[in-house]
Length: 409
Ligand SMILES: Cc1ncc(COP(=O)(O)O)c(C=O)c1O
Image (cartoon, protein in one colour):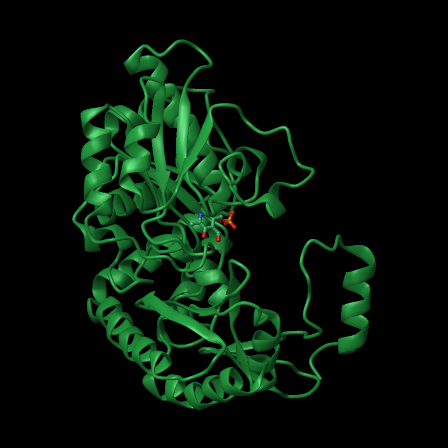
């Protein structure tokens, strides 16, 4: 055994000393290899089909993962954290690489996804005050029902999820929401105080919801016509997850602001970013924003390596699309009264269950079979494996998924 505490002691210690904001499964995870995670006490291996909520794109060993570790070690030996007031080479390099990679002008580095979204909202409001002449404190942000942009107070102000919001109010004023994929409702919601519309190109935590093909194009045009900033949250969908490098590329649109996170470090370190057009991003001046860890050289060095890998291995994303399509089509063949719909793109796939089938039971059933999956929006089983997962591993999982979906009830 590589650790001194038993599974039980680990669970009891964590439960005793930490808040209970996650419902923990009674499972301790110790070691990662490729797409697998092992519990040392039992020796049981699990196929990771969540990948740290989409972040761990290169898995937990292998040639790409090793490159990230090398980059991490090299930089850790040199310099880890300074302050944002000084220049470092990894920061400069990542700023250049990431803006080119995302086809944007300017970047601001943060740490978590929620922080990136908070930052995007701040930039949008400032831009609206400075350029549209909106009177102070009256800027509005429109978001989509069923969105997930994170858990901080500002971001929760955009949420329509009562469970996430309960007893956390009051929330920010000036936030409106409209149904996802409903252009007409958005059209009716905009007014002269609208600073920005923020949307996920594919809703992830909201149940893996894919918009109609022309929705985002119409939104982009509406935003342009009304001088409203079009913000795309690619934190979940970015870096190949949905079979294109960024999900919005499928729809031929270009946002004014884009948020990225999660996979930007291969899931190794928290790092996120807001990218945008120069004249939008430059509304921030010294002192108007900041973060202790945002843009730290360690995280930047790892993220640079991620981008280098994605540029070097041009087949990586196409492979995710191809094998993702195969996985989706095989899941769609499963016949079970529990299944309402199977949908997804690339390696972001949801199996929505009919009411009253309970997603927790199916997730637990899959765990017993050695498969880790997530749950999105109550009743949707969510599969978002590392993008290195092989067809062989998918073929190993499919009969088990089929069995659980047919048996559990
Ligand atoms: C689309 C989207 N935006 C923002 C976030 C928040 O990211 P974080 O948990 O890193 O704050 C998430 C997390 O799942 C997300 O899916």
